[in-house]
Length: 565
Image 1 (spheres, rainbow, N blue to C red):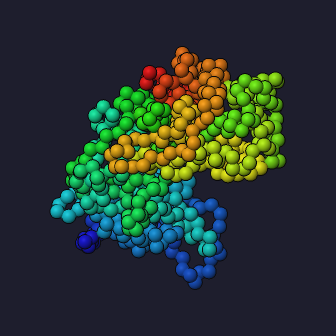
Image 2 (spheres, one colour; image 1 turned 180 degrees about the vertical axis):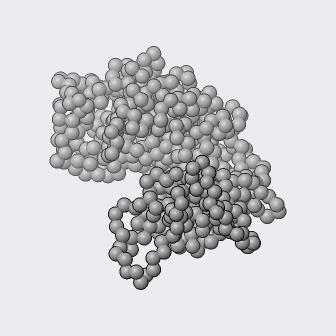
Image 3 (spheres, rainbow, N blue to C red; image 1 turned 60 degrees about the vertical axis):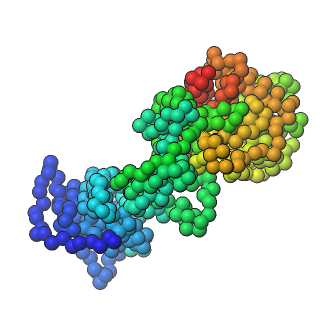
C-alpha cells in the first residue's frame, strides 16, 4: 500500500520567464513545483558548521523566507518527506503527516505552486489526484499557506509547522485518510420532509457533518470511499470504544467523495422557511450567528452562521454581556433582593472587589424601579447587590433553573452548553453582567429566554430523542410562579420601552427581549447580543465586533420572530 514508483530523472531545464517572474520547475517523481520568485531566491543556505557564523537574529529577510518555502515545497512535492520535514520546526510531526499524505490519503501527482509572499507568510496552491484501490480517482485542488520563523538556538529559518500547512481543514493532530468512510452518509430532512443541503442552506455544513457522525451508523446507510479529515479527538475516542460526549468536538469532514455511499435518512426539527430567513439575515452581518427554538418543546427551528467554517451558534463560547441579566434578575428576585416595581438603586458607579463598575455613558436612574434599570440595562443595579450574594449563587441558578453549564445537552450534534463558573470578588460581580468567566452562544441564550417565557427549562434538540433513545437534559427546578411573572414583566417592558424597543417594534404584545454588549480584549467594538421571544418562538443572535446588540443582532432576531409568526 502506498509504495511510490520512482519516475526517471529528468534533465534540469533553465528557468523560463513567465509574466516577468521566474518559474522554477523542479524535477522528481513526475511532477513540478512552481516557485514564483526572483532568480537566486531558491538557493539553499550553503554555509557549513565550520564557518562558525554568529547566530542570526531579528526579522527574516525576503530571501530567507523565499528560499525556506521553496526548499520545503520542492521536497514535499517530490516525495522527499525526510528533507521536507527537516525544513520545519517540528520534524517528527511533519514527517508523520507528510508520509500519511501519500500512504494513507493516497494523494498522488502533486503540484505545489507558491504565490507572492506576504511578510513571513507564503500562500500556495495544491493540485493532485486522490488515487485509491480499484482505479478510483478524483482530482484534488485547494489553497494553503505556510509561515517561516527563525529558530532561536541557531537563527535558522524554518517552516512553522502546523497540520494546516498540509490542508487548511486540518487541526494539529488530525490526519487525512482515504478509504471506506467511518460512517455512512445521511440524508438530512427538515421537519416537512424536504432535504437539507449546503447548496440550499450554506451555513448548515457543520450541522450536516455532525448529523452524519452521530447518526450515520444507525440510519441505515452504507459508507462510500472518501478522502476525509479524521479528527484527533474522535480517533482517540473511537480507539478506546468510548462515546463522544465532548461539547467542543468538531466532526470529521469529507473532502473528496470517490464513490458514493448509500445514505440513511435523518429527520430534523428545522423549519425550511425559518432556516431560509436565518441564512438571509446572517448574510447581512459579518460574524453573525442566530438560533430559533420553540419554547414549549425545545425544538430547534433554525440555525445559521455568517462564517461557515465553525458553528458559533451551537459551539461558540463567548461572553454574553447583558443578556445574562435575565438569569441574574431571576436570582435577585428569588432572593428578595429585587422586585420589578420596587425602587432599586442605579447609580453612575458601583464598586465591588476592588473594581469600579459603571453604566454605558455613565447614566444613572434616580428613584427608579428595578424594571426601569433592567430595561435600560443598568449595570450598577446588579453590581450593588453582589455583596449580598454567595460566590456560587449565580452558578447554581444557571444550572438548576436554566440547565446550563453541566455539559449534558444531547441535541443530536455537538454543542457547547454554556459556562457559569464559580468566581469571587470582582470576577463574580462581572459575571452578573455576563462578563468575567461566563461563556454562552446563541443556542444557550435562546434557551434562556425560552425558559423565562415558559418557566421551565426544555433542552433544545435538533433530532427527536425518540430516534436514538437519547435522554434530554433536565433542570432540577422551575422558576417559581412569582419570579417567572416578574421576569416576563421585565422582558416585556424592555421589548416595549427599553433598549430592545426599536428592534421589536410592531411584534407585541406577547413578546419579551433583552439586549447585550460584551467587551472583548483587543476588539474596538463589543460583541452585540439580542435574545427575545414572541408567542411560541424564541430566538437569539450575536454579531461579533458589531457594537450594541439592539442595533446589530436585534434586527436579525426580530426578522426571525416576524417570519415565524
